[in-house]
Image (cartoon, rainbow over all chains, first blue to last red):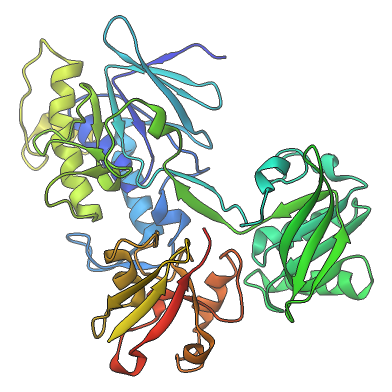
Length: 342
Length: 102
C-alpha cells in the first residue's frame, strides 16, 4: 500500500471525455489524477476502433480514434495529469473531512474533494466463453492473461481464439508446454501473418495441435482442469487432455465495481443534472457515456460539453473561497500562460 | 418487414424492421440484450447473432472485417453474423435470428 495521493479531482476513465476533463479542469487550475483499467489512454477510441474514422467531432471533419486520443493528450499536456493505468477503480468512500477516497485494485489511493466518473460503459474485461461452470476454474486453471510464463511449464495447455493474443501465446508457450492445443472456429486468423505461418510450422512439426473446434465443456475437480470437450466443425464432440485453458477472445465492457460505489444507478447509468453533471451524491460527477439525463445522446461531443460544465461546478467544491473568473483562451493571457503559448 | 428474434431465454420477439436500418439497431431499440459497444462500426463483435440456416444463405457474404471481428466473438457457428452488418430490406422479410450467448 502506497501513501495516499491528494489532489483536486480524481477521474475514473482516461477515454476522450476524461482527457478533455483534464483540460477544462486544468484551465481552472485544478489538478487531476486519472485511473484506467487499460494500459494506455483513449478508452474505446483506442481499444475498439483506433483506425476507424470519426466524422462528428466539431472542427475535425475526419479523425481516427487514435488521432483524437493523441490530440486530446497533447491538449491536456500543459496540465500534467497523472495517469494510473492498468488499474481498476475498485472502491470509493467518503472521508470525515468531506473529501472522497478512490482506491484501485493495484492499491493506489487518491483523495480528492471531487471525483469524476468518465468510465464510458465501465471497465474493459476479458470475454468469458459461454462454457458451463467456467467460473469455477478461473485463476486456478483457466486464465485470461499470462502473467508468468513459468506457471505454464510442463502443462497440457489449451488455447482458444484466432487473434494476435491467441497466436502469440501459442508461439511463446509451445516450447515450455508439455503439450499445446490451439482451437479456433475457422482455419483463418486475424493475427499477424508471420505469427500464423510460425504456428502452422509448429503444427507441421507436431509441436502444436490445431483443431477447428469450439470449447463445449470443462472437466475437473476443485477448479483443476483435467479434460476439455471440444466440438469440431461437424459438431461432433471429442475430448482432449488439458490442465490449463487460455481463452483469448478480446475484451468486453462491464460496469464492474462502479456498481458497488453506492451511487444512484438507472440501467447501469448514473443519473445527473444538466447544469453541473453531478450525480445525486455531492462531489461525484458523471460525464460521457456513463451518465444519463433527459435528451442524452451518447456522442463524444456531448461529453466534451458535459466536461466543461462539470469543471465549473468542481471549481466551487475544490476552491470554496475563491471567485471563479470566466475567461476565454483566445483573449486571456492568464490562460495562455497556463497553456504555455503566451 | 418482420424480424423474428429469439432472445437468450428462448423467447421469440416479432419486430418491425425498418428499411435501411441494421438488424442490430432494431434489436437494440426493441430492448433486446445487444450490447453493440462500438455502435455499429463492425469493431467489437458484441452484436453477434445466429441467422437461421434458410436465411443465412440469402444474406450478402461477410466482409473481411466482419469475418475478422467474428474471431473475437464467443461460440461462433457457421451461421454466425454480426447484426450491425445486416441491412433490413423487404427481401429479408421474416428473417429469423437468435441472440448469441454473452
